[in-house]
Image 1 (cartoon, rainbow, N blue to C red):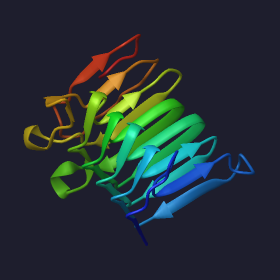
Image 2 (cartoon, helix red, strand yellow; image 1 turned 30 degrees about the vertical axis):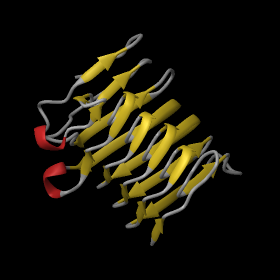
Image 3 (cartoon, rainbow, N blue to C red; image 1 turned 90 degrees about the vertical axis):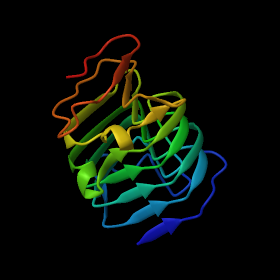
Image 4 (cartoon, rainbow, N blue to C red; image 1 turned 135 degrees about the horizontal axis):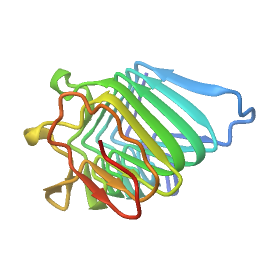
Length: 188
């Protein structure tokens, strides 16, 4: 499935998942492309108050005016990503992913295989991932790119910006990840 070339005035240019009727339900998307979409927040995907599982999904070339060029996850959301390509997305905060009172886990993404969290751009903070207050970002073999594929904030590298209590684990082959800090958290 391909979701492309859509525009939303507020959230979720490609896909908007909001307040799933049954909190026990998990929405799952597999082997799809979400590309070249735009919105104020969540250019590719906006998730609020819901659980979303993404397997083998490419979120590429999306744009948000404010938060989450690729994915915006907010207020009680949990996003689980496996074998993903989150790249070439742009936003003010969180070019790839923007979290606000939400959790995001990333596993098995390696930029050397064309899969990973890389080449995203933010004009303010968190080109790869912006982790806001009361949010958690867990990365296990989630490659943030090499020197030639780094995430960029205003032309300089910034894979992760941390504003809240956060956990980072196992960034795969990327030993050059960069983290900037606001109020707390760790980047291991």
